[in-house]
Amino acid sequence: MTDTRNGYLTTDGARIHYQVAGSGPTLFVSQSGEGDADRTVDLVGGLADRFTVVTYDRRGLSRSIPADPAAPVSLRRHADDAAAVLREVADGPVLMLGLSLGAAVGLHLLSAYPGIVRKLIAHEPIAVRFLDPAEERATREKLAGVVAVHRESGWRAAAAQVAAVLGINPREQDTEPGITRFPFTDQRAANFEFFLRNDLDAALTDSLSLADVARDAPVIPAVGATSPSDGFDYLAALALAEHLDVAPVRFPGGHNGNLTHPRAFGEKVVELLK
Image 1 (spheres, helix red, strand yellow):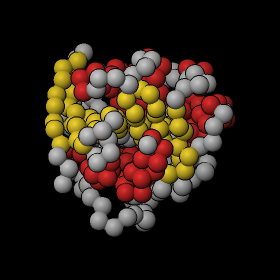
Image 2: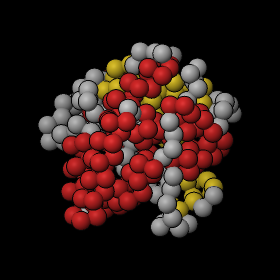
Image 3: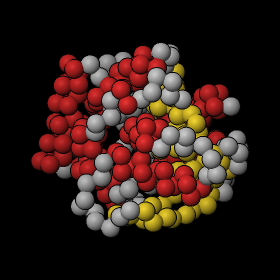
Image 4: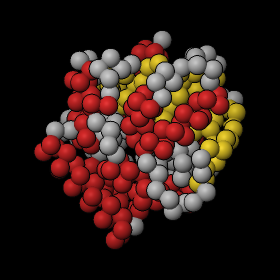
């Protein structure tokens, strides 16, 4: 079992929880959706023998408590929090794995804090402005529909619609054996509420565009091997790869391959960052 050190820091308007495990070069993992630091337990277990793995609860999730829970949190604010964590735990530039919303946070980090990340794997970033105009309009309509379902029918109905938009079928997913299951506890429900109430809107209103990503940025665009090829997050990764003039890397599993195939996913991370 991997030994994990828990820590807290106070930054502008919030107390942020983070975890550190393993030894070696620092690898910062920024999760997707409503995932907190604990959701990476299987992935961290396979990486901690090669990296000092840092995970955290994004502001508004689990143990990262904002002073004003009703205040909106932008993706740039999430990047500021991530930078505060990295200043706390790392002595220099870090490696980073950004997953979905976490990938968008990573791209903001590169833009706002030059030199803090030396290599970013951006796996299917939620970055709607990376899309061509027609796809962007369609994506905004789909995600606005999720927001409307949440407002009218609650988080469970909205979570099911998010999964459908991302091409995830929770009832029929191929997975590695022995993965950790994450039941819908009260805490996970609260995290979903925050994601749907705040972070989804933050992604829709985010200003980050491909023009904000330097063409020589140290980014590895990535997609899931079984993700729908017409999914907006998949297409955003392809647009990022084209902008950087590199080939996108295919990772095991789909949009949430870090959860369904943590061992194979971790091996791919090691291969790319060794």
